[in-house]
Image (tube, rainbow, N blue to C red; front, side, top):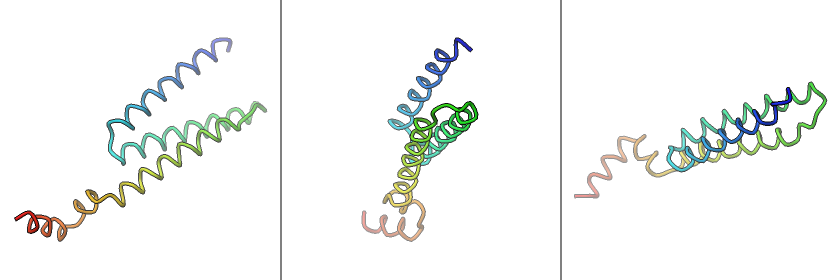
Length: 100
């Protein structure tokens, strides 16, 4: 138990490392997936701290922040022109005609 702060610091460092990496190089769907996972971890930590009668506010705030990032990524995927073009066969034909 006395090593818990060090273990948690390593855990959170790794999570930040993964989040930055996926944000810089991933697709919108990958970003949403990773940040939903981070939100789940934050809410699980909040529940664990609540059972121990400790402060949960930082964990809840982190979970809500991660969900906001995930929803923004999913919204960006759904409204991006490349997503709509790939999803619609008629728009692919239209873009081929426009290039001629």
